[in-house]
Length: 175
Image (cartoon, rainbow, N blue to C red; front, side, top):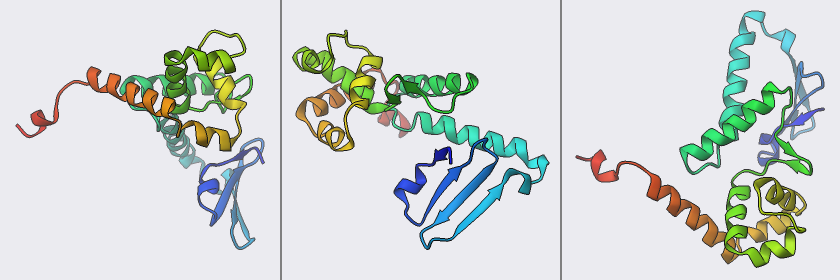
């Protein structure tokens, strides 16, 4: 099975997997039974609509953690470019894209160069270098990272920056 979908990790009622070459979807139910759906089970007239639904989901997922339109647009553009290149996942040399955690961590390391000096392996701070550092962390360390005061301050700073660049106000909504 080529792609274990995220829903299965959150919802133990079922997991979903797409085979290679991508023409069969298998639902593995929590009771041990499974349901297999082949693309050929669906009328060909539905293929375009199914493809656009999948593309909408994939590109929407790309920016789900974004805080600003710029972040969302950038995340979606990276995912779209990856799809156009024939790849399914956005990956750095050491693993899949991590999303908002990368952006916040990049800000945290920029604001705290002594921390970066310990983990950055002599590389300048960049999104790719930060992605590599994060990809080398296990899940437990990433959970600790997002609770660290430096990370929380960096996240707040990014949100403050986004708020400063926002247009309009709530009072205009009720005018």
